[in-house]
Amino acid sequence: MTDNRQSADFDTLIAEGEAVPTEGWDFSWFDGRATEERPSWGYARLASARASEVAGVLDVQTGGGEVFAEILRGADPTPGVVAATEGWPPNVPLARAALAPFAGTVIASEEDDALPFGDASFALVVSRHPVVTDFDEVNRVLMPGGIYLSQQIGDRSNSELYEFLMGPQPRDDVSTIDWLRAKAESAELELIDLREERTRIEFFDIAAVVYFLRKVVWTVPDFTVERYRERLRELDAIIRRDGVFVSYSARILLEARKPAA
Image (cartoon, rainbow, N blue to C red):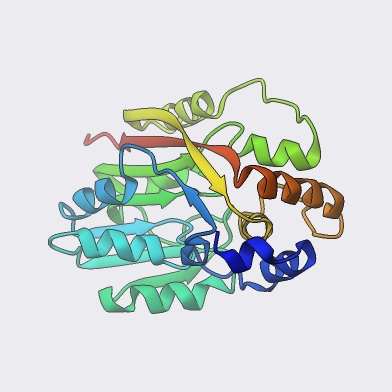
Protein backbone atom coordinates (compact mmCIF):
# COMPACT_ATOMS: atom_id res chain seq x y z
CA MET A 1 0.00 0.00 0.00
CA THR A 2 0.98 3.61 -0.42
CA ASP A 3 1.60 5.75 2.65
CA ASN A 4 -1.69 7.58 1.96
CA ARG A 5 -3.61 4.35 2.06
CA GLN A 6 -1.85 3.16 5.19
CA SER A 7 -2.86 6.37 6.94
CA ALA A 8 -6.46 6.47 5.66
CA ASP A 9 -8.98 5.59 8.32
CA PHE A 10 -11.48 2.74 8.12
CA ASP A 11 -14.48 4.87 7.09
CA THR A 12 -12.52 6.61 4.33
CA LEU A 13 -11.41 3.30 2.82
CA ILE A 14 -14.91 1.83 3.11
CA ALA A 15 -16.35 4.83 1.26
CA GLU A 16 -13.70 4.48 -1.43
CA GLY A 17 -14.51 0.81 -1.95
CA GLU A 18 -18.22 1.61 -2.19
CA ALA A 19 -17.73 4.36 -4.79
CA VAL A 20 -15.98 2.39 -7.55
CA PRO A 21 -18.28 1.44 -10.49
CA THR A 22 -18.75 -2.32 -10.84
CA GLU A 23 -19.65 -2.63 -14.54
CA GLY A 24 -17.50 -4.86 -16.71
CA TRP A 25 -14.59 -7.14 -15.82
CA ASP A 26 -11.73 -4.65 -15.87
CA PHE A 27 -9.84 -5.26 -12.62
CA SER A 28 -7.16 -2.61 -13.13
CA TRP A 29 -8.44 -0.61 -10.12
CA PHE A 30 -6.97 -3.34 -7.91
CA ASP A 31 -3.40 -2.58 -9.04
CA GLY A 32 -1.36 -2.10 -5.89
CA ARG A 33 -4.35 -2.94 -3.69
CA ALA A 34 -4.94 -6.65 -4.38
CA THR A 35 -3.37 -9.45 -6.42
CA GLU A 36 -4.64 -12.78 -7.70
CA GLU A 37 -2.38 -15.56 -8.92
CA ARG A 38 -3.46 -16.97 -12.28
CA PRO A 39 -3.87 -20.70 -12.98
CA SER A 40 -0.92 -22.31 -14.70
CA TRP A 41 -2.83 -23.24 -17.87
CA GLY A 42 -3.34 -19.62 -19.06
CA TYR A 43 -7.00 -19.54 -20.12
CA ALA A 44 -6.75 -16.56 -22.49
CA ARG A 45 -3.68 -18.02 -24.20
CA LEU A 46 -5.39 -21.39 -24.66
CA ALA A 47 -8.56 -19.75 -25.98
CA SER A 48 -6.54 -17.62 -28.43
CA ALA A 49 -4.87 -20.74 -29.78
CA ARG A 50 -8.22 -22.46 -30.28
CA ALA A 51 -9.75 -19.33 -31.85
CA SER A 52 -6.88 -19.19 -34.37
CA GLU A 53 -8.09 -22.51 -35.78
CA VAL A 54 -11.78 -21.73 -36.38
CA ALA A 55 -14.01 -19.56 -38.55
CA GLY A 56 -16.49 -18.68 -35.80
CA VAL A 57 -16.40 -18.33 -32.00
CA LEU A 58 -19.02 -17.65 -29.32
CA ASP A 59 -18.28 -16.34 -25.83
CA VAL A 60 -21.05 -17.18 -23.37
CA GLN A 61 -21.61 -14.69 -20.50
CA THR A 62 -18.88 -12.37 -21.75
CA GLY A 63 -19.19 -9.73 -19.02
CA GLY A 64 -17.84 -6.46 -20.40
CA GLY A 65 -16.09 -8.32 -23.23
CA GLU A 66 -12.61 -7.47 -21.93
CA VAL A 67 -11.36 -11.05 -21.66
CA PHE A 68 -12.94 -12.07 -24.97
CA ALA A 69 -11.28 -9.10 -26.68
CA GLU A 70 -7.94 -10.21 -25.22
CA ILE A 71 -8.55 -13.69 -26.62
CA LEU A 72 -9.35 -12.30 -30.05
CA ARG A 73 -6.29 -10.04 -30.07
CA GLY A 74 -4.17 -13.13 -29.44
CA ALA A 75 -5.77 -15.14 -32.25
CA ASP A 76 -3.99 -15.36 -35.61
CA PRO A 77 -6.01 -15.16 -37.73
CA THR A 78 -9.04 -13.69 -35.96
CA PRO A 79 -12.22 -15.71 -36.59
CA GLY A 80 -14.48 -14.20 -39.21
CA VAL A 81 -17.58 -14.68 -37.05
CA VAL A 82 -17.46 -13.33 -33.49
CA ALA A 83 -20.45 -13.45 -31.13
CA ALA A 84 -21.16 -13.18 -27.42
CA THR A 85 -24.00 -13.27 -24.91
CA GLU A 86 -24.34 -11.27 -21.69
CA GLY A 87 -27.08 -11.27 -19.07
CA TRP A 88 -26.35 -8.15 -17.00
CA PRO A 89 -27.70 -5.08 -18.87
CA PRO A 90 -24.97 -2.59 -17.80
CA ASN A 91 -22.34 -4.90 -19.30
CA VAL A 92 -23.96 -5.19 -22.74
CA PRO A 93 -22.85 -1.78 -24.13
CA LEU A 94 -19.38 -2.30 -22.66
CA ALA A 95 -19.10 -5.65 -24.42
CA ARG A 96 -20.33 -4.20 -27.70
CA ALA A 97 -17.68 -1.49 -27.52
CA ALA A 98 -14.93 -3.98 -26.60
CA LEU A 99 -15.83 -6.32 -29.46
CA ALA A 100 -16.54 -3.67 -32.10
CA PRO A 101 -12.97 -3.88 -33.51
CA PHE A 102 -13.69 -7.53 -34.32
CA ALA A 103 -17.16 -6.89 -35.79
CA GLY A 104 -18.52 -8.83 -32.84
CA THR A 105 -22.23 -9.34 -32.19
CA VAL A 106 -23.34 -9.14 -28.54
CA ILE A 107 -26.82 -10.38 -27.64
CA ALA A 108 -28.44 -9.55 -24.32
CA SER A 109 -29.51 -12.92 -22.95
CA GLU A 110 -30.17 -14.12 -19.40
CA GLU A 111 -27.72 -16.71 -18.06
CA ASP A 112 -30.31 -19.48 -17.91
CA ASP A 113 -31.94 -18.73 -21.28
CA ALA A 114 -31.41 -20.96 -24.30
CA LEU A 115 -28.49 -19.71 -26.39
CA PRO A 116 -29.89 -17.36 -29.08
CA PHE A 117 -28.20 -19.11 -32.01
CA GLY A 118 -29.08 -21.90 -34.38
CA ASP A 119 -27.89 -25.50 -34.21
CA ALA A 120 -24.26 -26.14 -35.21
CA SER A 121 -23.44 -22.43 -35.50
CA PHE A 122 -19.91 -22.36 -34.03
CA ALA A 123 -16.73 -24.41 -34.16
CA LEU A 124 -15.67 -22.95 -30.79
CA VAL A 125 -17.60 -21.89 -27.69
CA VAL A 126 -15.69 -20.31 -24.80
CA SER A 127 -16.76 -19.10 -21.37
CA ARG A 128 -14.80 -17.70 -18.44
CA HIS A 129 -16.40 -17.96 -15.00
CA PRO A 130 -19.95 -18.55 -16.24
CA VAL A 131 -22.77 -18.25 -13.70
CA VAL A 132 -24.67 -21.08 -15.42
CA THR A 133 -23.38 -23.75 -17.82
CA ASP A 134 -26.02 -25.50 -19.94
CA PHE A 135 -24.04 -28.27 -21.59
CA ASP A 136 -26.96 -29.38 -23.74
CA GLU A 137 -27.17 -25.87 -25.22
CA VAL A 138 -23.41 -25.79 -25.74
CA ASN A 139 -23.65 -29.12 -27.58
CA ARG A 140 -26.52 -27.82 -29.69
CA VAL A 141 -24.73 -24.70 -30.98
CA LEU A 142 -21.42 -26.48 -31.57
CA MET A 143 -20.62 -27.86 -34.98
CA PRO A 144 -19.66 -31.55 -35.10
CA GLY A 145 -16.06 -31.76 -33.93
CA GLY A 146 -16.37 -28.33 -32.27
CA ILE A 147 -14.69 -27.42 -28.97
CA TYR A 148 -16.03 -26.02 -25.71
CA LEU A 149 -13.33 -24.33 -23.59
CA SER A 150 -14.21 -22.91 -20.19
CA GLN A 151 -12.62 -21.72 -16.97
CA GLN A 152 -15.02 -22.41 -14.13
CA ILE A 153 -15.09 -21.49 -10.46
CA GLY A 154 -14.36 -24.45 -8.19
CA ASP A 155 -15.44 -25.42 -4.70
CA ARG A 156 -14.89 -23.08 -1.76
CA SER A 157 -13.30 -20.39 -3.88
CA ASN A 158 -12.37 -17.53 -1.57
CA SER A 159 -13.65 -19.48 1.43
CA GLU A 160 -11.13 -17.76 3.71
CA LEU A 161 -12.79 -14.43 2.91
CA TYR A 162 -16.45 -15.41 2.88
CA GLU A 163 -16.17 -17.53 6.03
CA PHE A 164 -14.42 -14.68 7.84
CA LEU A 165 -17.52 -12.59 7.14
CA MET A 166 -20.30 -15.21 7.22
CA GLY A 167 -18.91 -17.91 9.50
CA PRO A 168 -18.47 -21.60 8.53
CA GLN A 169 -20.54 -22.59 5.50
CA PRO A 170 -21.89 -26.05 4.53
CA ARG A 171 -20.06 -28.00 1.86
CA ASP A 172 -21.74 -29.58 -1.16
CA ASP A 173 -21.98 -33.37 -1.25
CA VAL A 174 -20.79 -33.44 -4.88
CA SER A 175 -17.70 -31.51 -5.92
CA THR A 176 -17.99 -28.98 -8.74
CA ILE A 177 -15.41 -30.80 -10.85
CA ASP A 178 -17.37 -34.07 -10.57
CA TRP A 179 -20.61 -32.22 -11.39
CA LEU A 180 -19.02 -30.68 -14.48
CA ARG A 181 -17.72 -34.06 -15.61
CA ALA A 182 -21.14 -35.66 -15.22
CA LYS A 183 -22.99 -32.85 -16.99
CA ALA A 184 -20.56 -32.71 -19.91
CA GLU A 185 -20.72 -36.45 -20.42
CA SER A 186 -24.52 -36.43 -20.07
CA ALA A 187 -24.64 -33.89 -22.91
CA GLU A 188 -22.54 -36.30 -25.00
CA LEU A 189 -19.46 -34.10 -25.03
CA GLU A 190 -16.08 -35.83 -24.98
CA LEU A 191 -13.80 -34.48 -22.25
CA ILE A 192 -10.33 -33.48 -23.42
CA ASP A 193 -9.10 -31.79 -20.24
CA LEU A 194 -10.54 -31.30 -16.74
CA ARG A 195 -8.36 -30.09 -13.87
CA GLU A 196 -8.43 -27.77 -10.88
CA GLU A 197 -6.00 -25.43 -9.13
CA ARG A 198 -6.15 -23.22 -6.04
CA THR A 199 -4.44 -19.86 -6.46
CA ARG A 200 -3.44 -17.19 -3.95
CA ILE A 201 -5.34 -13.90 -3.54
CA GLU A 202 -3.95 -11.01 -1.48
CA PHE A 203 -5.89 -7.96 -0.26
CA PHE A 204 -3.80 -4.99 0.88
CA ASP A 205 -6.57 -2.70 2.14
CA ILE A 206 -10.21 -2.93 3.15
CA ALA A 207 -11.34 -0.80 0.19
CA ALA A 208 -10.15 -3.58 -2.12
CA VAL A 209 -12.16 -6.13 -0.13
CA VAL A 210 -15.32 -4.02 -0.34
CA TYR A 211 -14.96 -3.41 -4.06
CA PHE A 212 -14.24 -7.10 -4.69
CA LEU A 213 -17.35 -8.18 -2.79
CA ARG A 214 -19.50 -5.65 -4.68
CA LYS A 215 -18.10 -6.78 -8.01
CA VAL A 216 -17.90 -10.58 -7.50
CA VAL A 217 -21.35 -10.77 -5.97
CA TRP A 218 -21.54 -14.55 -5.51
CA THR A 219 -18.70 -14.50 -2.95
CA VAL A 220 -21.00 -13.16 -0.18
CA PRO A 221 -24.47 -13.10 -1.79
CA ASP A 222 -26.08 -10.82 0.80
CA PHE A 223 -23.14 -8.45 1.07
CA THR A 224 -23.66 -4.84 2.06
CA VAL A 225 -21.24 -2.72 4.01
CA GLU A 226 -23.80 -2.01 6.71
CA ARG A 227 -24.65 -5.69 7.19
CA TYR A 228 -20.98 -6.66 7.59
CA ARG A 229 -19.50 -3.43 8.96
CA GLU A 230 -18.19 -4.90 12.23
CA ARG A 231 -16.57 -7.90 10.54
CA LEU A 232 -15.07 -5.55 7.95
CA ARG A 233 -13.67 -3.48 10.80
CA GLU A 234 -12.03 -6.60 12.24
CA LEU A 235 -10.66 -7.51 8.82
CA ASP A 236 -9.30 -3.98 8.42
CA ALA A 237 -7.43 -4.40 11.71
CA ILE A 238 -5.89 -7.66 10.49
CA ILE A 239 -4.71 -6.04 7.24
CA ARG A 240 -3.21 -3.10 9.13
CA ARG A 241 -1.43 -5.51 11.49
CA ASP A 242 -0.20 -8.05 8.91
CA GLY A 243 -0.11 -5.90 5.77
CA VAL A 244 -2.29 -8.39 3.87
CA PHE A 245 -5.28 -10.71 4.06
CA VAL A 246 -4.75 -13.94 2.11
CA SER A 247 -7.47 -16.04 0.51
CA TYR A 248 -7.45 -18.75 -2.19
CA SER A 249 -9.49 -19.02 -5.36
CA ALA A 250 -10.46 -22.34 -6.95
CA ARG A 251 -10.35 -22.54 -10.75
CA ILE A 252 -11.28 -25.41 -13.06
CA LEU A 253 -10.21 -25.80 -16.68
CA LEU A 254 -12.67 -27.73 -18.82
CA GLU A 255 -12.19 -28.56 -22.49
CA ALA A 256 -14.59 -30.85 -24.33
CA ARG A 257 -15.35 -31.80 -27.92
CA LYS A 258 -18.62 -32.50 -29.69
CA PRO A 259 -18.23 -35.82 -31.52
CA ALA A 260 -17.60 -35.40 -35.24
CA ALA A 261 -20.13 -38.04 -36.21
